[in-house]
Length: 275
Image (cartoon, rainbow, N blue to C red; front, side, top):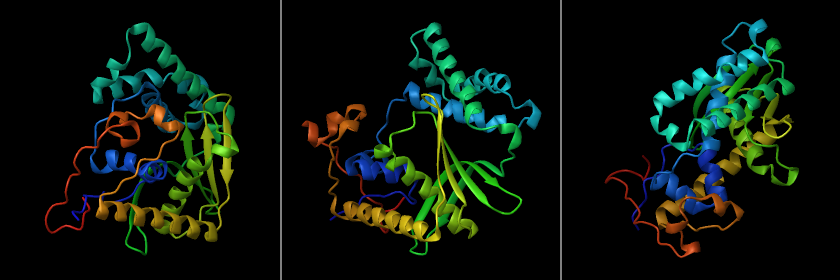
């Protein structure tokens, strides 16, 4: 059986894709099929950029008005880097409404935290670590706070609404994924994992993990990778239908909807199937 070229490292988003639907993981991480950008995802990128740059200002200047004023210049920078972004909007009025919705999310942040009292150690922190098993993990942490006592807080911004406890598993998995990377990189168990939801009325959820919980999360991540490797060896990437299929761009290629996936790419000779 020909081995598919798998990613060289596993990220929280790709691990979540596999848990949601193995075929979605294949389409995104193996076939690397293009996906049209969405205005919601683009707004998330814009808001994250504003919150990152907010902490470049002196603490007394971190106010709702100065934060909201970051939206326009950050949008211009984003549009310069990704010119296709402007094509998402039919006219200037629609763009204006979208920018105002981003400002509202940035302003809501101040209902949840006071940035004047915070001095993050890292923002948009890129991590790549290797687990004892040899599996490499990769990801970006929105914010890392370190107290004078050495306690670590991992903060992840979410521009959507806070999910009900029944549906918070995905966000919890992702923030524990970050915690495992921090733990393995710094050798310290983060004291707090914090999810800041800016959508709706805003909400903050947090977890105070133990080393035992991080070991369990690491084992879960390794188990996911083992299943990905098995799918790569066998070429069997099962679709998993759910309500999330309504937002999937690849239904035309999905057997669950009568489609046929493209032929699998193959690994280069002499490789183990990673890229």
